[in-house]
Every structure is written in C-alpha cells, then in structure tokens.
Figure 1: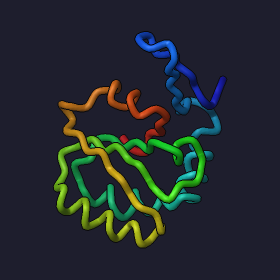
Figure 2: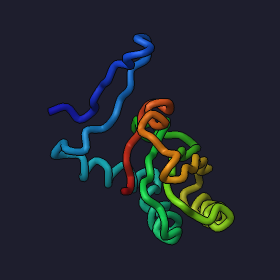
Figure 3: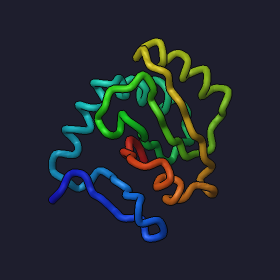
Figure 4: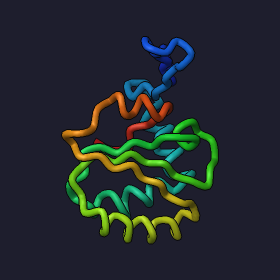
Length: 126
C-alpha cells in the first residue's frame, strides 16, 4: 500500500496528480506530525473550528508535499462569514509566523476537479 498515490491526467498526459492515501496505516500519525511542524494544528483549532459551517478543508502546495514554505495554502469548502474568516486568519498568522492563503468555495460550486487543478493536496478536515 503506497502512501502517496499518483494519477495520470486523462486529458493532458504531461500532468500527473498526487494525493495522500488516507487509508494508509501511517496517515494519521504523519498528518499529525506535519500539522504540528507547520502549525496547522493551531490553524484548525483557532480558525476553522470557530467558523461553524465548514464542510471540507484541504492543504495544498509545498506544505502538502512536506516542504517548508512561508505560505500555508488552504482550500475551504463551506458557507462561512468571509470577514470573520480573515480576522481569524490574521490572528493565526501571528501564531505560526506564516502567511495563510485561502481559496473559498460554496459546497454546491466545489468539485474534486478544482483540487486536481491545484496539484498535490492533503485533506485536513471534512
């Protein structure tokens, strides 16, 4: 059983998509380590859980690959108060000393194809 799964793009054969196998026995342990290392545990605790109507959250970009980066890129699916989200993000950024960039989607407009367009991702919540 592989930890990182690779999928070829049927439309563009030059593009490959990678995702973490959430059924892998080490997934929960490694996810917890990564979240603590980059401070994502604090983001989840201080930002996402207070928003209420969050359906799904994905980490994308370099951090999803396990590479350090000054940016935390998130995809959030849900019906949330954007103004409140940005206030919470400001607070979380000072806690983890990283900039947080967010792509927001309403549940009805979100599809898995949107995730494939960003490349590597890790599901954090939902």
